[in-house]
Length: 366
Image (cartoon, rainbow, N blue to C red; front, side, top):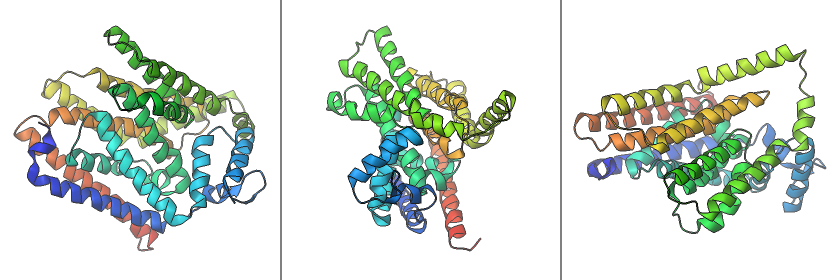
């Protein structure tokens, strides 16, 4: 019996808390208008005229591929959402936020209102820049949305028995590979690792696992080899190789020692308690997720810039790993059970304070 099912009296509290988080996030979405890149993507990139339909989006993404970069899936979706207007975008954002929390729990193998409540709280609390990764529309589609279908791709390889996987893995695999520069290649490697593990355990490798990895790889090629990447790269000027390497080193150091530090510290703390206090064995899935975190972080060394919002996918993999260990820890009776309950409430309170702080800034109170 799972931790959440033992705590019947707390289910209503967790569900209400989850709804409170969604309401606060919806208010944030309503208060933050389309801005910055949103205004550019609201136009036909090839003609600089306002978008009028899907043909403009297609023309824009062809131009984008050749002149700016290969993230055509996310930016094409962004343009379609922007055409729907602010309220449409805000509703979509909340629906995807719910889907992300659900998929975090599913990938971690944890179900129940407690885990949904905790996952939602941690996504906000550990976020290096919640405004730019979840509430700014361009950031939301590039990170919140893409991470959702990335988790669905990974869930297919973990569960391997989801209904209709052989069909829906086709678009999901392409979208995963064609998402962003660090998470796409990471998912390809994780898929190959899971197939190798299946082979080692003599579980067999299903055909969709093979063509899912191939399609993910093809998507990776579109992102990485898009001519627009090289056009944009030429616009970044360095005085020499030494300056370039130094800036890459600083960006990686900042991401690891600042942006991702809360996630890493929480993961380490839970891992130590899980392994050395409760004496539980790390499963392959836990180690697999940890490797995924390291790969998605390390892949950004190839990027000239590592913005805080780009750590979103790495952070989410860390949260999945934390939830998987907490799911096993939650089966313990007594003190462990109480500590986990307090931990979830503390994460919720922290997430609420963070959003209320952002709302106070938007309202001019700070």
